[in-house]
Amino acid sequence: MKKDFDTKHLNKKSDNEHTRRKNIEIISVSIRPQQVEQMNKIMQITGMKSRSKLISHAVSKFCDDQKEISDITDDNTIVFMISHNHLHKSDATSTILGYEDLVRTILHHHSKSGCLDILIVQGEPERIKQLYKKICIMKGISSIDFSII
Image (cartoon, rainbow, N blue to C red; front, side, top):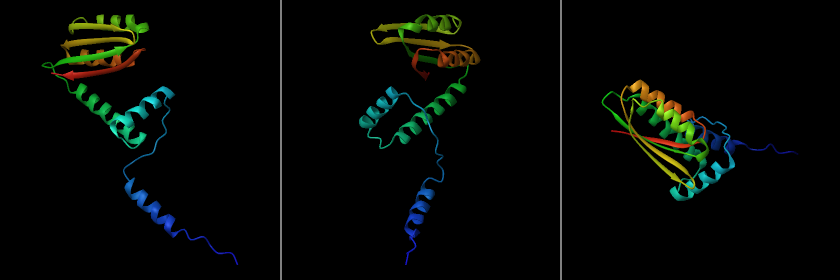
């Protein structure tokens, strides 16, 4: 006689997992192999246990940054740190020059691996937000970070 498979223990585990993941949505993400390698290195350095936690942390930081940049006022001075590759240097420069009214200081550092531009800007908040958006979508930008003073 064939015995029915007991799934009670499986359902309990699923219920527990469901309870833990109640506020988590599972998504699929496409990432270049080089980025996966970088993620694995970061996980080793930081001790993070999963790529999901690493990506969640990165998304949280990005969302926090977007909120912070959207809240700037006339009184703020913003320091942008932009790293980009050599091939798109002229794109970065021409974009920055389109906002000369905001830029108080530009520092450019050229190295074998790429360029770093440090911009200190001050002025109309909407123009600063426009500059930030343009830099974010430019080709060749490796990273953009900022500090609000």
